[in-house]
Image (cartoon, rainbow, N blue to C red; front, side):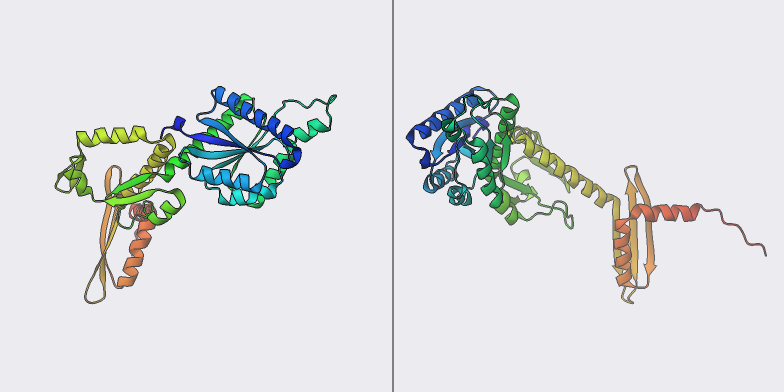
Length: 337
């Protein structure tokens, strides 16, 4: 689905104690707020007023409905009146969609002169949202809290930004990733747990051999070298443009790490050749962007320590090279007979 095809459900908290007249006013105002916010042009998705929830059952039912509606990308909750938070526990425990606590109030200002008990009963967002925030914190729920007046442009932009992030999470749950050639031997930065990735992010990650891209005409092979074809380049451009910006940024970041690891593996190489008598030949190779800097081979009496030397060189080849150059360039005084 496209970004604009998703919607967010506006769930307003209250309780039956207030009576039908107050609850009708709450519902009318919630619908009005959703209409105004949708018309603001600051929200990328539709905000759909869903229900004024008054009981544990109503809250749980709307949460379960949201969980199974693919168009619903998240729930935005607000308490126009006081809403006892124990009613929300079962619903919050079942919630599988992103959740935003919208801490606002219907009126921009409080009428100090005309305020009375009826006004206080109806407009208890300061009281209801505090109660609502408590239970979410007690349950340690992942959530976004947006506080401010709902008609302010800054508040609307923050709500729109959260909507985009929530849609990204929904998109991620259906993401399919194909890894051609998988990761290079012994390279840690590209190693990943595919099972954990699907558990946490919903990504279905599968491996395909590089040779399959040759068969489909996306790559051409010349010996051990692969080159992208025009067909492969066109398909890559199509895939790149269809990915959300955040996904492309993560790909660029990880490709940078991978390229760095591959470059390092090519510039720093070691080898240990064991001999029957227990000795070994240790090979050390070091290069930079300009080409090879050093290649050494030496005999070492212990194979175990030979491997230890090779590993130590892999960690800090620059230091080894610096010390070697310093040693070779020192002017030594000749001892007089």
